[in-house]
Each structure stands twice: as structure tokens, then as C-alpha cells.
Length: 265
Image 1 (tube, rainbow, N blue to C red):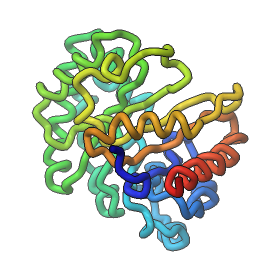
Image 2: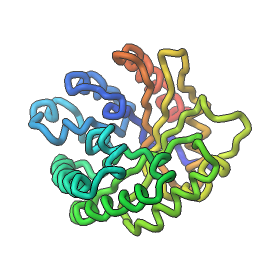
Image 3: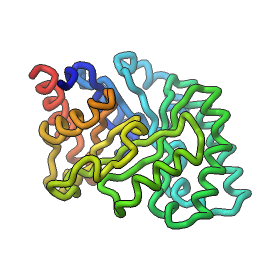
């Protein structure tokens, strides 16, 4: 039998949504949310006043979005070694800053599909991650790699599992990027995720709100039930795409109502 939804953490992926710092405060007032993903700028620039105005103590889960520029993170494994060293050195400094802001989970926005198609890039990414590992261990941090569902190839879950094993980094885990409206009806979770269930530390729901897609209680409940077997309590983040964030606030309101209804139901 599934545990209560009261034990699970839900929130908004403000960093992944590209929310500017001026907009962060507007989305921090939903009392039902106990998780939040901040943009990197919250930790790397002086925003003490903004921090004081955000009730961040209520959050059980505080995550940071991509620790480095997204485009650079997606290509660095293909760059020359000297540029990789510079990238890793800067990433270590940023991890220290994130930790100083009382955040201990962050994401490296790699394009794992491209990396799995190039053995040298795969080895380079492991090299980069090993350069960051002392900072992860010192700060007791978890670094997440994004993993898209559905995958573009049925071999991807096995390849991702082997990558994690080969890296031998205890603090390296997955952010599961679920695109619920791209999943073929009748596809089972085992087909989608394979051996990766216990490697997931964050679940994020992505969809195009401008095209009329809407998150539903059925979607949230089904994935919460799937992962309940593995004692996963979240966080479950919402990341609806919308140009100029036009539809983000209505989607956040809808998500808050869904979470409240699930907890009270």
C-alpha cells in the first residue's frame, strides 16, 4: 500500500524554467510546496535580501539547477583537455558556493545521448566528474545528471547504469526528466527505466504548456506510486515550458491544487 502523499515533496523547478531572480520571489509563496529548485544565481551572487524574503526554511528539498552554463555543459566532454580542466576547476568553486547557501543537491546539464554515442566523450565526462568528486565528498553533496524519459533508445537505461557503476562516485545520481505526453500508451515503467530506479534522486515533469498540455493528478499519482516501492519520497518538480513564462504561474497554481487534493484525499 502506498505511503501518504504527506510524506512526499513537491515543488517548482524555477532554475530549469529559466526563471530570473526577480521572478523567483513570486513563486515561493505556495504553502503546499516543500521542495524548490533555485537558479544558480541564487548561490553565486549576493542576494541575501532576497533569501531573507523567501521562506526557504519550509523546504525539505532545496536543489540548484545547472551548475555551469547549459550549452557549455553539453559540449565540454568533447572539448580539449585544458578546457575541461578549467571547467572542472570552476565547477568545484561553484559547488562550494552552493553548499555555503545550504543547498546540497545540484545538476550538471550534460547531453547524455550525445555522450553515449562517443566513447571518448564518455571517458572525458568521467574524468571531469572525478575532478569534482573531492568537492562533492567534502560538502556531502549530490550531483545529478539528467536522464530523459522516454529515452531515444531502449539501450539507454542500461548504458546509464553502467556509466554510474564505472564512475564509482557515490554522490552521482539521476534527475529523471519525464515527458509524460511523449510516452507511448501501454509502455511499462520497467521498459522505460530498466535498472535505474534506485539511482533517481529527483523527478521532473516537462511539457509544453503553450501547446495546451496540462499536468494531471493521474500523472502525478501514477509516478508517485511507481517509485513508492523504492521508498522515493521526492522531490517531484514541475517544469512546464512557456514562452516568456506566460503560462507558468497558472500551471503552478494548478499543480499546487493537485498536490493539496492528493494530500487531503
